[in-house]
Length: 238
Image (cartoon, rainbow, N blue to C red; front, side, top):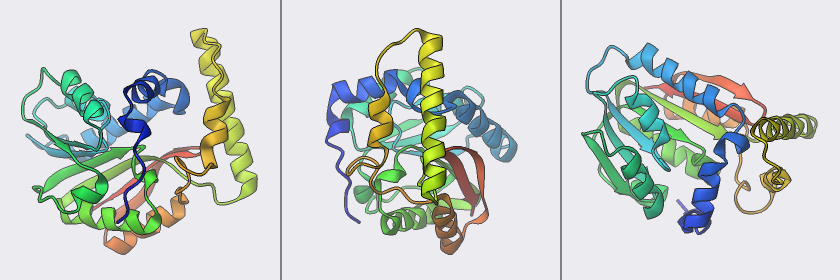
């Protein structure tokens, strides 16, 4: 498994800027978090001390949201950036039973972790090629307890150029709407322009291919749980 270039994420200014503008860059971010919590309540809400793994945790926002509805969670957060892990530790300082692991996805494949009831990731796995995604999906499957779920919030590759053009317009309209509401005049066109440039978004795969990969690994109840243009939430059950 080759390792993606995370040089930019190691830079504090880049990571901080991304976090501060995430609500503008990520379409319906609040709704995605709300749907994630709904999914967790429905499928894991009756469990106590649910074991949760967050892959590419960033500043810990996903675990923080889940802890808001279930404070008994036992969480393991993985990220390749020391700065992001520090931000996650600061965000989650009031909670107990939290473990932090500094590792890239490549390194993670060689780390022996416990089994989990729930594995989640957001906007991190798209850095991998399809072959690498499958390897990671197999790793996740092998570390899920029977009946456990994997949910991924991700940027996807549109299946056709026609749809891609529309999805980019949807994204642009969202950014303009949020900027207007917040009174921000910064230019975010670069975010859209970089969508398929070599580098950050160059390894995107279609939603269909990623759902097929989960099915091939052995996941059940595989589906897309939410989608808005190029942003989607999908997953499955062991």
